[in-house]
Each structure stands twice: as structure tokens, then as C-alpha cells.
Amino acid sequence: MRNMSKQEKFSHGSDRIPPGQSLTRRFPVLHEGSPLNFDPATWRLHVHGRVEKARELSWKEFAMFPRETALSDFHCVTSWSRLDNQWMGVPFGVFAGELGVCEDAAFVRFADHQGYDTSIPMKVAMEKGVLLATHHDGEPLSPEHGGPLRLIVPQLYAWKSCKWVVEIEFMAEDRLGFWELRGYNNEADPWKEQRYS
Ligand SMILES: Nc1nc2c(c(=O)[nH]1)N[C@H]1C(S)=C(S)[C@@H](COP(=O)(O)O)O[C@H]1N2
Ligand SMILES: [Mo]
Image (cartoon, rainbow, N blue to C red; front, top):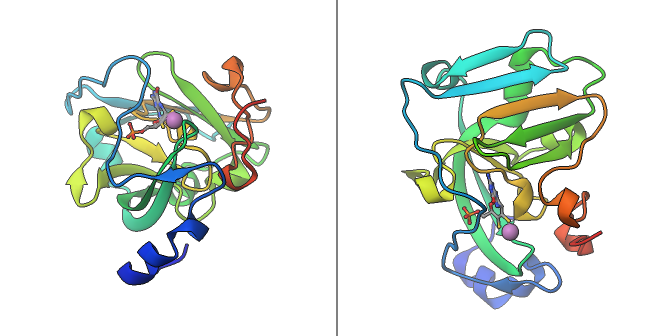
């Protein structure tokens, strides 16, 4: 990820904006359905599939995982890009490492509380900058932006960054998610404009 000075960022912004995208300084809210009604006492993260041991993590247990801060850009397929988001959360690679993921897990699927889901290859999930995020720009994630927990995959279009994650499934074979079943491209690389299939 590039780290540019403010001046540089705004004079050469265009080489950080993928083709067909335009810059926004706002932080739009975009989703299907409604935010999760978060109760730390009853919240659970269901982890299953190709892992050594399926788990139901409580909020307290999830809070034990080490967190990091990472700066990244966010590109929505509807064409807005928001640069320099400061996310804090558990690096997905650290999370997967602690859970003992089976060797044949080639994909990982994330789902919310109301049937939205999406998947990415494990190879991408393990890259730097992919976070199970709890904070944005220094504040706990608001319900509209996916609080208490969302995925952040800065290298792909933002529909892969599942909000309100309550389920993580490790898979040997891929399965199409909510938008991927409705015509979005499963690769979703904004630099290749992989918007629709
Ligand atoms: N659970 C869930 N996650 C979701 C979505 C959704 O509808 N449901 N929409 C996706 C899309 S298309 C985008 S652009 C981003 C928007 O994130 P934001 O509202 O925090 O800007 O969330 C993604 N994650
Ligand atoms: Mo989006």
C-alpha cells in the first residue's frame, strides 16, 4: 500500500483511483437490508467448514485476537472511491492462523445476519490489509458501516467487504455470494474493472 503525503495525494490522486471510479470525500452507506442490532452479550461469530474445530466465538473471545491498524482505499462498483481509510481490526491471516484452517481450504465465505454473503480465495484473504475490522478512522464501526465487525478487502470491489460478519466458512470449493449470483464478477478486481460477469 502506498503512503503518500497529503499534497502528493491530491495532486496525483488519479493514479490511485481505478478506471471508471471517481473520488468521494464522504463515506457513503450502501447495503441491502438493515444493520445488525448488536448486543455484546449475545453476539456470536460462527466459524465452520474446513477448520480443525468449528467455533462459536463470543464478543469477549473475539476481542482477545490481536488487532492492527491499516490504511487503505475503498472502491465501490457503483463508482465511488474513498481513499485513505484507517481501519483497525484483526488481520485475517492472524485469525486463520490461530484457528487451524485445513489445508484444502481454498476459499472463505463471509455472511451477515440476514443472508448477505460473499467469498474470496484464501490466497487473497491472507494478503496484507485484509482485516476483520472493528474501527474506522479511530472510531468503533457505526451500525450503518457494518459494526460491530466487518470484513475489509481493500484490493477488491467493496461488495466483498461484508458488513456485520457473523459467519465465516472455510471452503474447499467456491460458492457464489449474494451479488455474485446476481451478475457481479466473482474476481472483483477494480484495477481490471471486473464489475459484472
Ligand atoms: N452485509 C452486507 N455487507 C455489505 C453490503 C451489503 O449489502 N450487506 N454491501 C456491500 C457494498 S456493495 C458496499 S459498496 C459496501 C459499503 O460499505 P459502507 O456502507 O460502509 O460504505 O459494503 C458492502 N458490504
Ligand atoms: Mo458497492
